Length: 124
Image 1 (cartoon, one colour):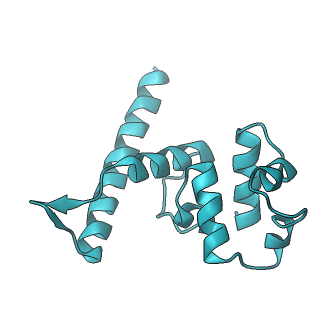
Image 2: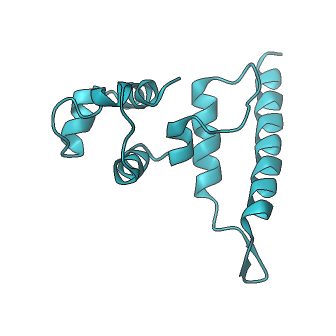
């Protein structure tokens, strides 16, 4: 899924059009449509992530591999869950980036395991 497709998906999920999002963010007409062929600035990417309450990594398609059965909504749920946690640290010290990546990978594994368990429970 491209950046523009993700934006369109998230807008539709909120019952909005791409034009509505442009208007809400005070962007000129067709700003988001141009993302089909250009890259956004870091500032614009951050504004879009904040607007949709997702991470910039999600918008860029950098989330880690999810199970084959996971839906786009499942992936958004994971992203929101991970971004809602307090900053990662231990005994008042921030974790280094390598440790944060490992913790995130572990948390993703726990999330997908729990999500699959609930899917299986609902299918009984």
